[in-house]
Image (cartoon, rainbow, N blue to C red; front, side, top):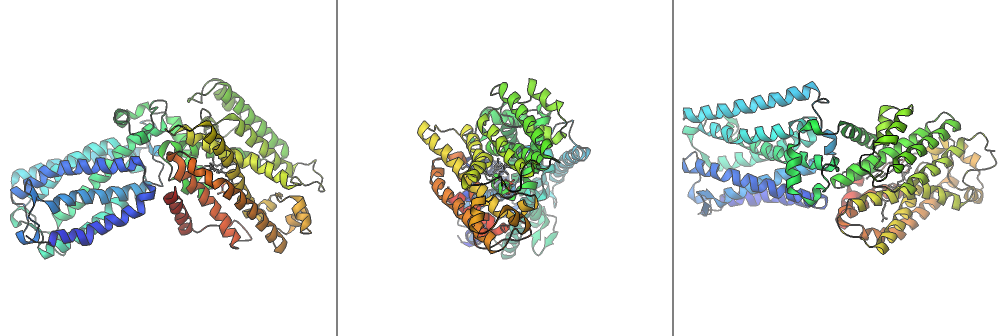
Length: 592
Ligand SMILES: CC(C)=CCC/C(C)=C/CC/C(C)=C/CC/C(C)=C/[C@@H]1[C@@H](COP(=O)(O)OP(=O)(O)O)[C@]1(C)CC/C=C(\C)CC/C=C(\C)CCC=C(C)C
């Protein structure tokens, strides 16, 4: 009996697993826990017979003085623990690396599949069939290739199945979400293995191995073993993820959200032929995700911590709001901008006339959207607005809020009459363009939550969401004084400007300096007041959206904190460094 193998775990695998657990815990959802549990159970069940065979036939041996002496089917307990902890480490890392990716955007159909993906998937399948056959050949031939043969013939059929299910998605995703979580634990385990082989904690018999080392004492079979088993874990989760993505993006086909772990729907989603996917919805979602990533770092980062279906709906809502805002901001004349507002209202009329249906692209609305001279990407943003979830009133109000922006460039405006005269004008504007967004975000979270929320709590939540939206808009205005001035806009109330001896014209000419700084601080103060008044209510948000909503709000409020500390670049926007942003999101998730 000896402790050496147990010490390998104590020194190398357990600390890494503990570190990853601490880092990942606030980010993990119930679904993630199910992913890890499912994968670990499959890995252990599939490895036990194989490993037992290897030990009983003498391919692997363990000196008695290196192991504790307890075993199951000849497998030492330390070895059994290895299957569990390796699967745990790799799956956790895989899940972490995949958080930034909105999986549903990587679904595709045979018609939209590019030829490189078709060829890549087929090539992978051919290689895996060949590797399985080669493994079988090495086993039959007996001798030096036996161990390698056993690895290939055991693992490659599983890889073939999972690759066939999720190969396209794996090919589309960035390498940081696929190769990285496979290769990083592989290199680490190679080093641990090298150390253990050198110390003789486990040994591979000379007669059944190729006798070729990758480096040091690390036999090529061991290197392949760790690479292949980590790939098995990653491909296994990828197949699971694909089913979840299908459930998330097609609620009309799969009414139950994947988070509630509906086993049969998930299995059906996994094997649903891709020819039955709604291509328009997937492409629209991809464009919406690109719009979100390109336009707002805060909301893009925060979106990655929302559970799948809420994330899809928020991304689509963001895309609609951003598009509407851009159409109006980029219009060449006030007349054109007002024209967009009435067209957008027309779109809402037809979207809400047809009632709360999930298929938003039917009947009059489709005709309305097609009739307009919009780019294809703009059309999809309108078509995919989740109008069956968000109430119509805040959307109409948002468009009303955009009218204020048009007021800044309206030719009828006299220079003497600022658009935002009093603090109440500012409050009304912020309530229209951002209080409404708070309400709609809440609509989405409540719609996708399972628990019951009573009327009284609902009312308090909606009031707080509106307040929080206003707080965020104040931060936005405080940050963008110079950017807005360059567009001819001053949102600071004229009454405040007068108290500082300023006018709209002086701020337009010089949007910085001590007076502007004081006004910015005043606005930030108002933002923090409203934030503090509504933050407590967030504890009442249902579990599914609570921590991620806090993360979204905190990530934006952090801009205000940077500004309050004087972190402003005069020529542009104040930015929160990535590390600080991540810390804020992490802290909000821990608190939520
Ligand atoms: C996580 C995620 C994907 C969230 C999406 C949220 C969303 C739908 C935002 C809409 C953004 C938008 C373009 C709105 C048009 C009007 C406008 C410009 C509003 C300003 C937003 C800034 O967006 P922008 O793209 O310009 O971002 P950058 O500054 O460039 O990074 C606003 C400042 C409004 C933002 C307001 C909210 C997100 C509402 C906050 C309130 C809650 C989340 C509710 C909290 C709940 C309780 C109970 C308190």
